[in-house]
Length: 291
Length: 156
Image (cartoon, rainbow over all chains, first blue to last red; front, side):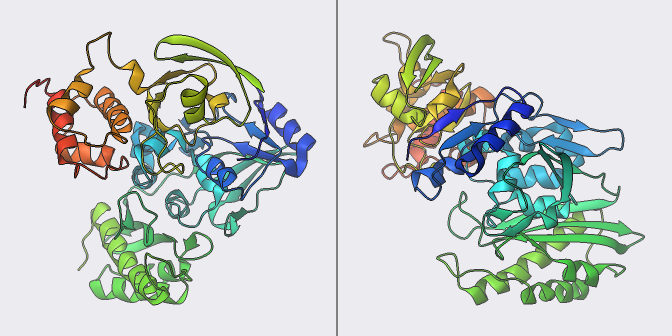
């Protein structure tokens, strides 16, 4: 690992000023599990590393007046999986967090890091897409929010500007009859990246699918929002045939890479299988049944 | 260079270190605490597990400057004088190690487990410990050792 200067701002304003001062030389660090590995491999060689760890309030979990779930960027995966508020209001996010790597990584790695790292293999982004989450960003010019499915632009690339800091995410309240599921296909080891992962959320109304969200990890250069599947489900009865036909549509939009976890055709087939299973599990979690 | 102050195994330590010093190197080379081993160096194998503010972390991925003001517990901090920690004794009594390279990490991860959940089920032990790799034991002896320590059993 190359040498760098470590800076620990005390306030978000100071952190933003540090980013402006150092420009492209600066990299933000939260838990460090992503950045330190990249620096060790000399894939990223920042002249200065700016830690967010002293910034007050950035690890908080709250519900606002509109019942939006607000989670700070420094919240660890361990907190996401164990927080009663997250488990009650976004069980899909808690479940996805629980499936990340090992306990040692989950105690260090943060929500904000998982989002800006933008590795399409990661677990939280598909869950956040299925939850209609918005990413909150702060720059010297002010704040903005970006819908999570417009946040990722490519492998390890996001819309985040060099002078911006991801401060947290916001998740809107779910419909009462919503059920969700996160499935991670792991034929190798339990702490591996998925061959394919699927986050699904289904809202039922009088026995039909009122709305659905489906998103995949490890299926393309970015986390993949499978709108085509959602469109095929809306207004339909949750029959086995409907789920099969809707899930099959994902085959045309996945663009996985071949690696030791499987070939491209295999991963495409598994994406279809796991979308169907995740939809079935989400319908069951919503109190419905596949007929 | 940065000055950091850390409580290591209950003792206050102050050192001047390079900004990019890893926690595992700080422990091994700056403090001479070589009980913590470095295995894979990418946060996967668990050999370098230590407790940072009570939580298990991969010390090969942690910057030592980020431990400033915090508390680190390593394998050297578990025994009280000549009396081994119950987990250390159980790993001996139940054959929870062979070559021993992964053992400090296994025991620190087990300690974090029993601190969070004093009476884990075998399934909970397996889920928590799955990131601590051992190439000798086949894992069952490790699970038995943790169960024995949790049950405060001293003899197999």
